[in-house]
Image 1 (tube, rainbow, N blue to C red):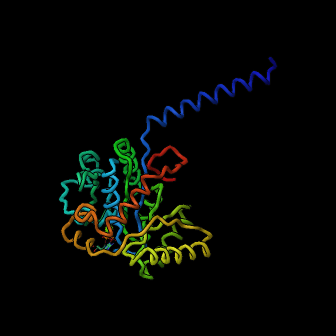
Image 2: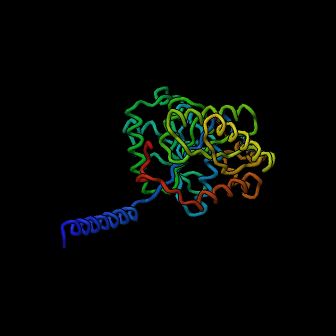
Image 3: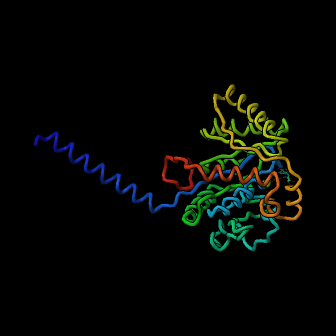
Length: 288
Ligand SMILES: Nc1ncnc2c1ncn2[C@@H]1O[C@H](COP(=O)(O)OP(=O)(O)OP(=O)(O)O)[C@@H](O)[C@H]1O
Ligand SMILES: [Mg+2]
């Protein structure tokens, strides 16, 4: 056999070894969907949407963690009526492990609570950001989905969590200011953080037609000014049952499972569960 043929054969064997190793590694690794739920304007329904999507996925036998990433002004525990003993602050200080801090939420969703009123959490230091990625990566074997409920706007922490997540859901309401603020958020994430994939949930919609119109308006703007198309993930109807549930500190999907909003949220959760996104990297929770 001439030299070139021998080399070619060796290269082919090496390649198939590498493929085998990669497949074995993938089988052992749990693929986590890391999904940021974010918005430009506050109060558009991020926390409700993140909590209800996590709840619906747990009902589909998935394991879901809800990370309260509104670090300065925690709100997941308030909305869900929980009184956590420890929170992310203790984890970042090294006083508690993530397993000691995660609490059980409605239906068995796992919740990593944030601290409230601690100024040093309002803007994470570089060291804390590294520690956070490390602890979340250590936890990823235990979960299928991580929903990151961010604060609104374009402050540092919000950008950090959106940049670290593999998928970004932008929540808007039909109000014009919610759209302009969403556009500003997407623009910064696209131009400064090289994020390319955004999907929209239109919350508090009157009907599906209104939600589609809202989506088209925003997509037209991003397409025209940024040359970027955003995806449409779904809509959640304006439903007084959501307000009732918030008052009773429960998720609407548990309290009123057949309400219009719960049906919409379940449909979006089913859509997420039915996908198999092709993350290009190793699936770590990381900057990408
Ligand atoms: N689909 C809906 N129909 C009716 N009301 C809704 C709906 N979704 C949310 N709301 C109302 O909007 C309020 C704000 O929701 P939520 O706290 O989830 O918003 P947020 O975007 O997380 O706010 P923040 O930016 O302050 O974190 C809720 O208290 C609820 O009353
Ligand atoms: Mg919120």
